[in-house]
Amino acid sequence: MPVVSDMAVVLRRIEYSETSQVLGIFTRGHGQVRVIAKGAKRSTKSRFSPGIDLLEEGHVSFSARADRGEGLSTLTEWKQARSFCGLREKLERLAAGQYVAETTLMMTVEGDAHAVLYDSLTSALQSLCDGAAELEAALRYQRALLESAGAWPRLEGCVVCGRGSALTYFSSLEGGMVCRDCEGVRVEKRAVAGPTLEMLRGLEGAGDAGGSPVEEVVVRAFDVLDYHIAHLAGREAVTASMLVPRSRRKVT
Ligand SMILES: [Zn+2]
Image (cartoon, rainbow, N blue to C red):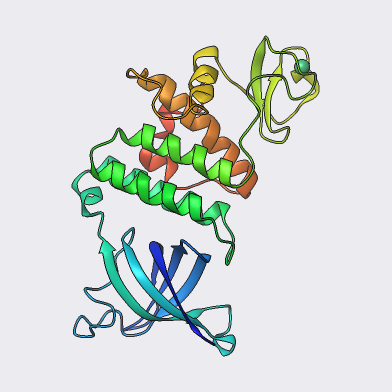
């Protein structure tokens, strides 16, 4: 198999043996790839200089091997491009970075390239390093992730009847807001307050909406999108509660 070169971010790292690691990487041109890095834990080996860390970006080369089993590719080279070491300066930053990584793994499949999402991912990690508000950075990435998956919800009108007012519930299954008259028969739904809906709509615009949003509204908007992502992926992101404690979530 030919050796492929790309840019990649490390989203998951599993210790495989005394000397090797299995990495879940998200590449710009080849999507999610699982690679085995033999000898990665021996710092004297220069192929993987200077070692491979979670959430760092690098120039990667790997060869897909049919005889590897379980679809593991062999990492042949890793050269660090950006360490995003600023993530480790603050617990909330690292939690936001880990949430971004986990949801990327949840919402993408191996070998399916999403260059735009890759750029959103590295932008999110960079903005966190630069001191962006953690939850807002995570919220913007949720938007990019759902957009990339073609699952950004309909927020302007009721997904059932089209009505533009009294939109009080969000349904992941229906793919958007549901009005007061239509929500009755929908089992899968959650209440969404007006300011939360406005915040979610604001994410659709280009750039910043301006001003500092109310933190509780950001929490609620994050929670709605996290709920949608969990529903689509079939499991909850465990890192969500590291970013926002459960006691602050599950409210409208
Ligand atoms: Zn309706």
